[in-house]
Image (cartoon, rainbow, N blue to C red; front, side):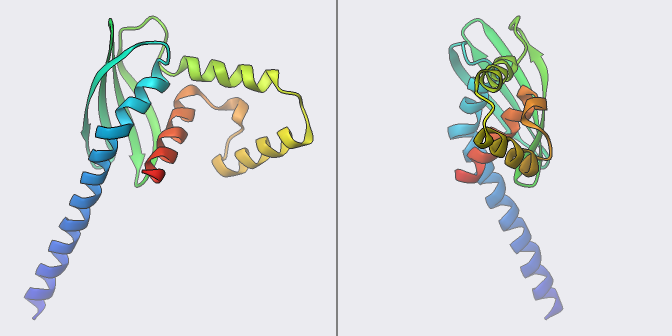
Length: 150
């Protein structure tokens, strides 16, 4: 009886892990790589992408017309926690554009009570002020939200 219970538990763990990996694999196949491509270099023309899902990170190779970006995306369970650009052939660093857009939006909006409430709520949720977030951190948030809605 103990042997059967152990075998059942082992198979269950493997099944759940395989389902999670396949779901994460499908997410990057159908949405994740394209989303990363747009966040990393929104003005480049995306051609294709490749990825490999590991237990605590994902490697993504993104190919644009004339440029290549290789990213390592760290994750902790269902949350994407960091991104490192391993290789990038574009002269603009990955995720710099999204950070620049964020800065323009923050500086260009009127400082109202509503704006301050949104900024405070954001800071509570992500444990950092929006004005201090880097483009990579914002990409992690976008990737996590997209993963949750997948």
